[in-house]
Image 1 (cartoon, one colour):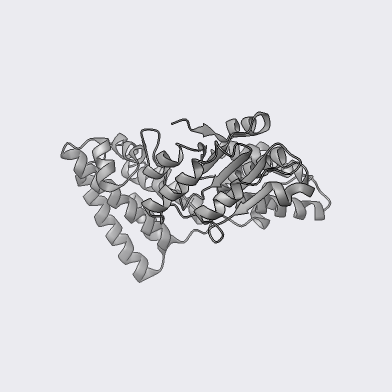
Image 2: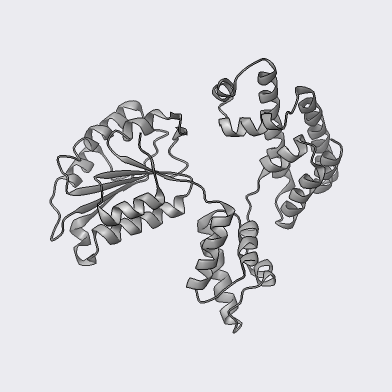
Length: 341
């Protein structure tokens, strides 16, 4: 199976568009950007978009409707673009995926089309890549080129934020750009919104430079946080690191009840992994049994967390939960949890 990256797709769609692509992965924002790139390459004249760009979604899609979309020749152009989005592959039955693939097998016959199936991150399970792709991905890859939109790293997002500030007529130091990602989170839709809001505010003040103070005053802190990193630090008994993560979450005003809930869930996963590992299970066998990604399992095992430590952490979580409910001081309860291990 030949899975390409987003950058490869952008090059290919401009040089020699293929017959069909499957967009999948965590970065939904970049998928929409890639669709725009495809539109600009295949349907550059908007006056012919009615004929040469056909959109189907979960409401209008059927195998018959997709077949009908493939058949007409492009109008005053070499190719036609067909966009199919909104399908919930996780809810589709096997015969429904087979019916879709039957239509996709017609792409070579109607080779003047470029079809893009845009699968949102929460509606398509790719399996465990690269070794164990899901059945849906394997079937679709027989007819489409899979394009993997992986979650961007904080460093890449910081560089992107800097370019976004410049696009909106402002600027910020690399440190402020990195802090923007930390403060607003890694969701690119949210980052785009917050950077535009910051740029508008700064320009309204007659300035171009965005400062840390502007960020703290105007931008909304992200609700997301890395509970696994926090729990992993607790499990490795890296108290200072865990307290620093908690301090950051507190600054973002993350809900301590949710934080503790995520810690409890992660401790449960750690306990199950530790017990199965102690019984001689391999990483792959543990992954299959618990439905946890092998990479995450390797992180747990890397810290050599024993079942006894997991039992201790579980008891401390129970105590923290009781204190949080009785005192209402959620952060204090989590701090005690960290310091007691």
